[in-house]
Amino acid sequence: MKVLIRADASPTIGSGHIARCLTLARVLRAQGSEVAFACRRLPGHRLDELRTEGFETFVLPERYPDEDPRQAIESMLPWQADIDALAALLSDHPGFDWIIADHYGLDHHWQTAARQWAPRIAAVDDLATRRYDVDLLLNQNLSGLSENYAPLLPAGCRTLLGPRYAMLREEFICPAIEIKQKASRVLVNFGGFDAACQTHHAMLALADFAELEVDFVAGADNPAWAQMQALAENRPHWRLHSFVSDFHQRMTEADLFIGAGGGTSWERAAMGLPTICIAVSNNQQANGEVMAAAGAHVFMGARAHVTVEQLRQAIGLVVDNVYLRRSLAERSRQLVDGRGAQRVAAALAGAVLKVRPATLEDAQLLFDGRNAEAVRRWSLDAGIIDWAQHLDWLNASLRNPQRLLLIAEADDGPVGVLRYDLRGFDAEVSLYLLQGRFGLGWGRALLARGETFATAHWPHMHAITAQVLPANQASLNVFRDAGFTQSACAFTRVLKDQRK
Image (cartoon, rainbow, N blue to C red):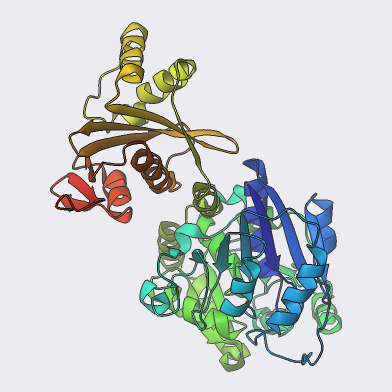
């Protein structure tokens, strides 16, 4: 699978768009995909970092004609100029399977035009404020609601909504940090640029907490760097950093985090790190409020309305209350498990999943997959199958014209198995995933790709049915999401009206 990611970074935009897409790109590459980035050469771009990691990059201009350099983060880009610049760079490129746009300044005009290079377009979004011409839309925030997107998306667009899809680095699939009786360490970070000088603001609020050890990670180009150096100079428990290579480790050692409401929100949640959050841009406000309502962090509101004294009082409240910190940790961990990037990668790869008929050469794969404990637990026949019994079943299945046995494969190998048994005009489907594929959303992709294969193989088929154990909530959800109609624990998907 070939993927192009269109995202930018700058002091105005921030570095979060590139950061989360880079996480996704690493997962996609590990699964065998080829990933490239198209980015503008804005101040603070991260093109060099992307190249260092081995990703192909397409460099777009810093400015376009008639573009206002002072425009806000959510302002629209001159989309035709961006498309024209991209066209010049991609003139000899063979094309992509997906183009992913993570940019507030690009809407349905750009997405429609970008289809000349890929049959599928995805958008990573936080706002729900414009129209989209995409096949898949991701909003990893709690505030991303399906009803907000319904009038903005084309028919058939798949949505991935909520922190279940938060794209975090692999180290955030981790145990919860320890919540100590007494908080002693604080970590402060407001992103890679902190143009709003909130790190300096937090310093002023922490000045009276002499007993706390504090790490301030402020970014190399922080506009308040000189003032912060002066404040930290005579405080031995304070450490001011322009950059750290062990940010995750510092998070594991912290008892309290003070920061913005961007992508780091989900990293903190995955670790169970108690947080005081301040929105440094408009797009962080709604998610900050919803996370606070869920009990996942203490939200102070928009930066312009948070005084030093208010922040000082909030710090004192959280530091001195172990029960509050435990509650924040527990509630935040309930939201995020750290596997969001793998789920997004599975949704992308699932759209181009290859399905083929099984052969005798798949005997060991099918034997191991069917006998896996996680598969047997939810099978109608939960017993262990022996090798001789398995070979007899496989030979009979391959000879049976009323049975279709399929293997689904991604770039990095087999994903799962589908079996269709035709009875008259209806076929009953059963499926299972292989080791390492559970919990990432592959089941929906298997059903979709399998249905395409089965309807081509049996053109007269009218409906597909399935039986699911009542306690198998994951499979119940998969069939519902795939458009099947449920009756008790039986599912049916009607393909044709038998009267025709």
